[in-house]
Image 1 (spheres, rainbow over the protein chains, first blue to last red):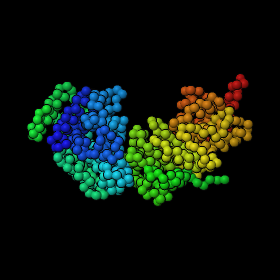
Image 2 (image 1 turned 120 degrees about the horizontal axis):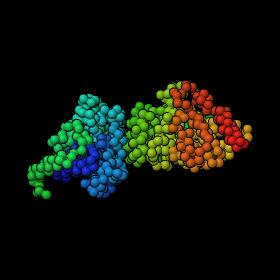
Image 3 (image 1 turned 120 degrees about the vertical axis):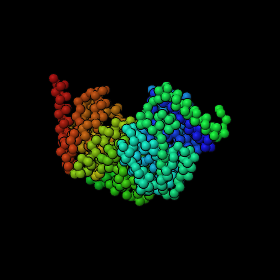
Image 4 (image 1 turned 90 degrees about the vertical axis):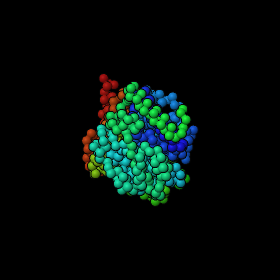
Length: 283
Length: 319
């Protein structure tokens, strides 16, 4: 998928996310909009996957360690055909498998996550298995910035460097906010780049909404043989919805009818602009 | 004849035999390869061994990732840390994600007798058996440990195993036969009462049975090596056929083997029960035998309790 199409895709995923959360009256709006561009880059361009064969042994693996921001992932997996798109209507409803965190009963989900600080250890295990078996797949693990306060993240960071896992890419969705406020007010985690470098990782900072830059960074990892890569993606919580951006309450605020219409209108306008700039015909 | 081979050594030797032909068998240690007796495995199979350092949360997560990739990881780490520090990883990464992770809690129970409560694991059965999808196993002696290890390699799914640090007196004559997860072993048949034990207390139960036998009491002894899934059929058969049950375990009296048996008995066929274990307190320091004796986990005490239970039944019958 080329850059314009990726940007359009990310915009449409954002619209799907908002509709789904509005319909379910539940969800983590802010985080699912801050990670949308990262997931779009991974799923539509960077990762080797096969929706018709979700357990293809040589596929690249994705672990959503910040499991609460699952809405964008559900919308992307449905769009790619891992499961029927109509199933998105069941999100967070009684008996659904599309729960509020990744659920490996759903095709395309590798592991159940949701308890923070678990994903990177699992990703280390997967990357280590690939190394021991001489396999070429890569493992991507998306973490939250608030999640960096979990001690187990750093246990996994140590192990990833110790075993020289250059097939492992950690990504931090650095939107700066967690449920109680700014990460630096709740529990200061900076300087993140220095910390990860000190733990033996190759650190790349990127604008997590700049699709061109994201794709370039994610496609080229690993850049340093023998070292895992940490992509520090600066993002904006609730990105794409002007009146929700950077507001902590939108961590799990559910848009009301009026907010949904305003948000969809903004995103539709942005999509039209992308199409004009990219020379795409209006749908 | 006194056995000098600890169960941990048997696990290592059995895994080494199987790992030659099964390159997916892996052993993980948290700076615990010495206490897990896994040094020989690490040396012989460096590509199938993973050291994670002192990081019990990480060891379970890494094992889950390895298992997801087709490996058969055996996590060997002290039971006190593995069952407490990593319990969320056990719940989510092993059980909930249903990964083929074998968690071997070494130096379990009060093996680290003099080191104090931080190093005792007397709540591990309570917490692990409350987790859906996780099997919980305590092998009785070296022979059963060998059979169990072979069965674990064949078994697909997460299991928590607890073994002690020191050699255990044999309760079986050989390692022949098959270990069936979830199936209790009738070590002695009997009709007056049943003693249900697991792990190192199976030996104590058998010794109690010998004393009772000499006094003309017919005592059944069940080795409940799998505490979850519990062999409810064997428990209820014991309740119906013998009318009294004593459980004995190297665990807190809350939430362990006794609780599991009682949950079944009380709902389906209530009979008088006694639960022997470690009381709700930081356990006293000492060697296993000393600590057991202190808390009444001895053949004499079990036999005495058995006589009192039975005489109550006889009195009631005569009344």
